[in-house]
Length: 110
Length: 114
Image 1 (spheres, each protein chain N blue to C red):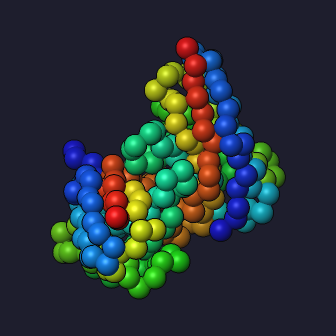
Image 2: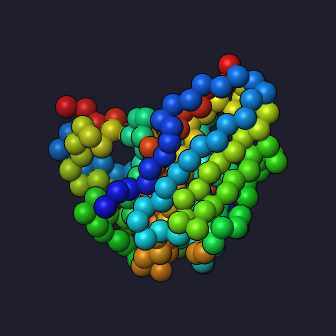
């Protein structure tokens, strides 16, 4: 699996957009970008995934650069409940496992 | 619709003992994966079961074994427990949607080995 690089931590003000970067410069053409988050003491929660087009759902937006070497997860209006560790993962379609790195610890402040 | 459920929530065992953890997948899901998450680290893939067979395995010793039942529920067994096996054990089931897989995780079982 391609490796991902994320900043270890970031702060965000409540009500503002949170932009979480992820580098995956060795991504292959058949690898998807997935984002999960893990709130303290809970299991990881699926957020969104994409291949090459930008994606949006009720939780977030995923922006993937044209060369697919990096992506940004956008939480449009961060709330205190969005405080969590966010994981960016790349995975080949059909592969079973998710390879988690250290993730980004996001702290939303009032 | 119940999500992924795991039991027990917490467990304390002694070195050398054996433990069995249980998982029921989300309704409609037929594939179960197990992950180990040590304190302060991301989850690490142990193995996945589909159609009652182990389909893929991570870098874990044979002391870690599993089983999947006809109703898709699963067990994780760990033999000869070591102190280093203390961790949160997560179960995940998956759904194929939008040409890719989404995995849904349970709340985990916190295992402490003393």
